[in-house]
Structures are given as C-alpha cells and as structure tokens.
Length: 126
Length: 254
Image 1 (cartoon, each protein chain N blue to C red):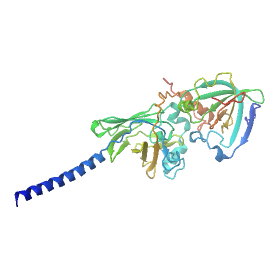
Image 2: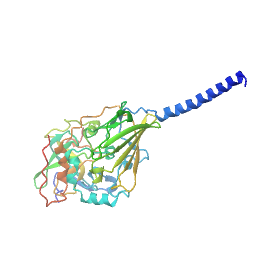
Image 3: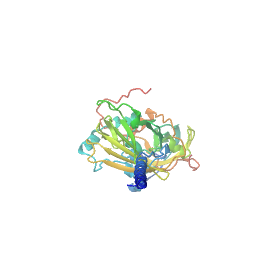
Image 4: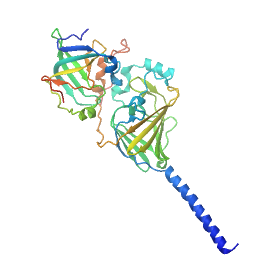
C-alpha cells in the first residue's frame, strides 16, 4: 500500500460515524482513516467548483508524489468566509495537512474535513 | 309600505350588500396577496430539524423505483454532466449549500443561484409568454408562477431527461415526466420553501421537503465561472467503471 511515506506523520483509524464524509465525496475517500501529510505547496488555485491545492510529498523511498488536497464540496464562496483567498498558499510553502486518503490506492488524494492545514511552525491557515 | 320603511329596507340591503362585497373583496385580496420575497436568501435548512437531510434523496431511498436503482448502477460516474461544469437542475439545486436570489416583477419571477451561474425565469399568468411546444424540453424546464393564498407557487414541467436530475451524487436521474412544484411563503422575516417532485418513471410517490432560509446580507458571489479541468480533477482519484472502453476524450472547453 502506498500510504507509508516518511513524510506521513501518522495514520489513525477513526470510528466511521465520527468521520462521515460530505455526501458528494462518499465512495472516494476512506471515511475511517486519517492521514497527516507534510509537504511543499506546488499549486493553489482559488477557483470553482472546488479550490485546488497540490502538495508535493516525499515517501519513505525518497520519491515525490503530488497529492490532490481537497476541501470537499467547498467552493470559493465558502472558503472566502473562512478567510481563504487566492494568496493563502504560495508555491514552496511547507505545510502540514490532515485528512482522509482515497479508497483508490493508486491515487494520491486527501480530503480535509472541517480543519485547516498548518504552517511548518504549527500556526493554522488561513 | 311607507316611504320611510322602503328607504330603511334599501339602506339595510345596501349595507348588507356592501358588507358581503367587502368581505369578498378582502378574501380576493388575501387570495392574490403578493408576498415580499425579493432579496438574497441563505441556503435553506430543513424545517423538521434535520439540517439538510430532508433535501437528500439517498441512493437506496424507498421512494425510488427499481428503474431508478438500475439506472444508478449502470450509469458511469465519469459521464455525469457535473464534470463538464453542467449545472444542477431542480430539485437537486437546493441541496447545494449556496444562497439564491429572488426578483419579483409584474410578469415574471427571476431566480438566480449562487452556484453554476444559473438563472431561471418563472412566468406569471399575465406575461403571455408562450407555452412550450409539445416536443420542446429544456434542462430547467418551463416554469409557470402564480400567487395563491399569500404564497408564490411555481410549477415546472418539460424537463429534458437528466442523468443527475434527482441527485447528482448518487446518479439518480429524472425523466421528461418530472414535475417540480415550489411553494414560497414568508414566516416572519424568513423564507419558507416547500418543494414537491413527482416523476412516474423514477419515483414511486411524490417527494416533498420544506426548508427555511434567512435573508442574506451579502450579495451572491458571482460569477461562478466553473473551471472544467478543476471539475474533472476528482476523477483522477476514482477507478474507471469501464476500464476496457477507449479513453474518454472530452471536447475542448471554450
């Protein structure tokens, strides 16, 4: 299984009931599993239907993979209310993000639910 | 009969007539009362206290026909119009958490939604807007509005077949026989919307829900300006349903 990179700080099995995904993402992410990734921002696009965050993460073999970090069903309007904008993340920023990985084990996707990524010093975005 | 008696009788008759007519007039006024609905309204919450659960037709909902479930199982997620920035139709539109705007005019009601750049027009009886021909169907159908007992009623028919017409997340379709009835009323400062959907092909019985919205002080965040590549991003995280078929080559976006 690919979810064993050194940059993944931890994996935690959660009670499924406590991690119910947004209905539009059901069947894509593992509701009962949570991962924490540390990586470098490759791209942040503040667009609709869903703002897109691409994160480069090194695995335990030293290979770099681009992760698609999703805010689920949130659109630009929703994230604006939470304080996000087009400049929240910049290429090269080192961030830590926690979420649910994809069911498809050949894909690199992570669903954030409710929380926010943090900077390398631990302060939360935005 | 004395002249004074006759005058008295006429006076009583006139008074009674005026009272009857006055009452009828008030009833007529109440029947045609136009509720003040214009404005921007927040995403509606279910009046039954389930937040948004009442809005969602689940994939195994008991109201679905066997035909609907068979379509759900056969439909390729990758072919859903939403991945090409296709808008949500009604009634699914209201399940997405966005504000919407209502504008009341003499001959029409205009609904603008905070998602998908969708604008719908519902025509009032005095509009003389032509009714659709019998072979004329459209994605949002033909909407006719009227005021009735202090409510705005909008009836929509003549929808095209829509593979995401009842729910875009579970591949629940709707047919050309879909009919959506919206009933808008005011309760205090709140907007209450009751939606009833029928579709003889895909629903065993009418599906009704009721939501309450607060006025939104913010204007709609428009344009939506959907990015097709972004809409398709999530497909890279899913296994294809028909891996032996030729690869999907989408038409170029504008």
